[in-house]
Image 1 (cartoon, helix red, strand yellow):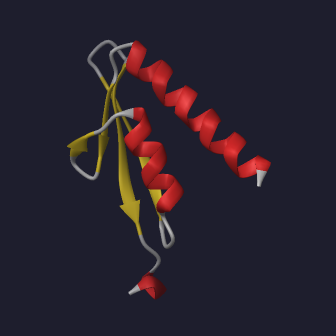
Image 2 (cartoon, helix red, strand yellow; image 1 turned 90 degrees about the vertical axis):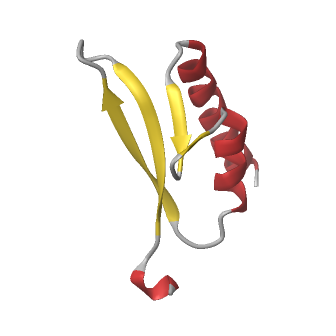
Length: 75
């Protein structure tokens, strides 16, 4: 169980650092905080989230989006 908690803590601190850099985070089309994203990952029973890195004109990260991904068998 400690490994799972460590993974979520690691994800939170990663996303928090993006937030501190002013990078917008989106989950399923809506702006979300690092905590909201981590909680969504924690309660997720089926499927997962795919990351989409959107760059600005200078090649820097502008937006980090998370999109729900379901297996065909999930439906």
